[in-house]
Amino acid sequence: MKVLEVKNIYKSFGGLMALSNITFDIDDASITSIIGPNGAGKSTLINVISGIYKPDKGSVFVGGREITGVPLHRINRYGIKRTFQNIQIFSNLTVIENIMLGFHSVTKYEFINCILNLKYVKDQEEFIKIESRNILKQFKMEHFADKYASELPYGQQKKLEIARTIAANPDIIFLDEPAAGLNISETKEISEIIIRLKMNGKSIILIEHDMNMVMDISDKIVVLNFGEKIAEGSSYDIQNNIDVISAYLGKSFNNKME
Ligand code: ADP
Ligand code: MG
Image (cartoon, rainbow, N blue to C red; front, side, top):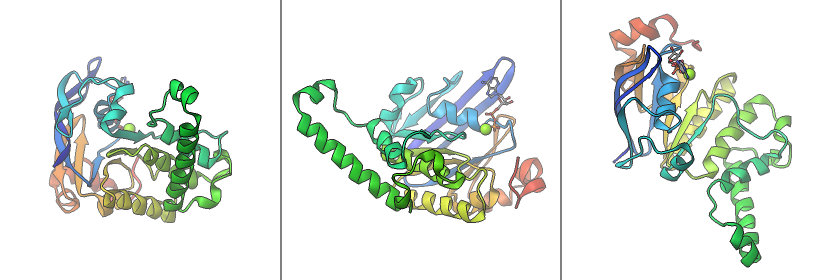
């Protein structure tokens, strides 16, 4: 089943064609990477898929339902969650509170419930706390639970950012450079987390400059260059694609790219 379909997307900024006729789809429980040189259109594509930008032309479907133009505050209902390149955590809250906030973006009780049924709300808080601890355990971060997020080393903050995304139980998770600024062992840990998410049925869309990571974990790679899709396929296909090598990989494969 195709969890996401992107069809003939165009997006320009002024005279600049940032995306031109981009089409691809992604399977349930899979890892798809979007790669390409700086300015190729990767972030713009993610912003279009997640509803931050409206495309000039083309459509986006999630689980067969069209979501093109669905406003940003509604898009989470379709199972879309993303983390941002710049860490979006609340540094003046504790680690566990950061995760709990991730849950709150989906819990449905409303003000009226707070008044009518305090016990229900209390039970729900308790449930959220337990689930949040479970997530921290999965990320091997339980011992940080009561520390302020600002006290965590950078690598742990990157993990917390992903952990928070999981709390909302999305089907599709966008990760924009989750390994940026991390060392080799931290990068490996992020790879393992992403693979585990896939095992749990999530579909991951990854933008990442670390080509070793991309080649190791991706089921599918989509290559952009100057706003166009120049290739799509497995790691093997992409590493042997002449167009990709000349546009992109040739220069810098095996390196962190910028
Ligand atoms: P990537 O993420 O692959 O580095 P981007 O999607 O950020 O590339 O950018 C693609 C092109 O669109 C670049 O030329 C960039 O300068 C331009 N661009 C991106 N966002 C905007 C914007 N909000 N306004 C104007 N131009 C933009
Ligand atoms: Mg970008």
